[in-house]
Image 1 (tube, rainbow, N blue to C red):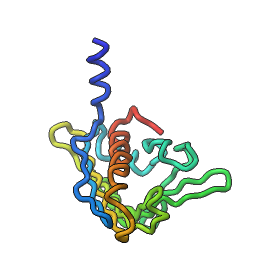
Image 2: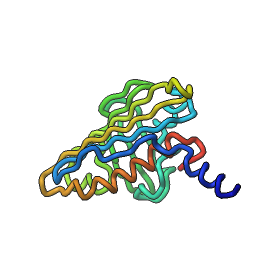
Image 3: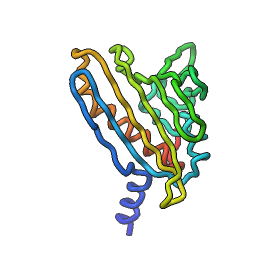
Image 4: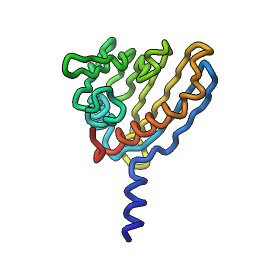
Length: 172
């Protein structure tokens, strides 16, 4: 019974799919999908509060409480603490309860001068009444960027992120 419970717990909120669609030295495309039990409106509210679902391991401060997002075109996705600040991304487009698009070269990609567009879409899942969440990420850099080698690590971070966004029991 304990094994069955552990397996079931591990499967809750797992993405329906996660993949590196393409990866070359100067480009990668990622796609992740998950379904949440939350309504579209509830998922949206969670999405625009990254401190509620982003993992602390993928912050500079080690604490998600320092993350915040200004959900307006041009608004930043920031991490600020004790006189330090990192702009992780900037909102390019926002369609409330439907789509958030960010210019988002997170982590080491920022220092590499890589252009990253991360689009997050939400729609009602007709089978569950919850929310289908889709992450699409496109990165472009120079041929020296080595994005084919970086893509699997970014894929892992975004897979973890969509899993945490989809599952309200997983918090900062």
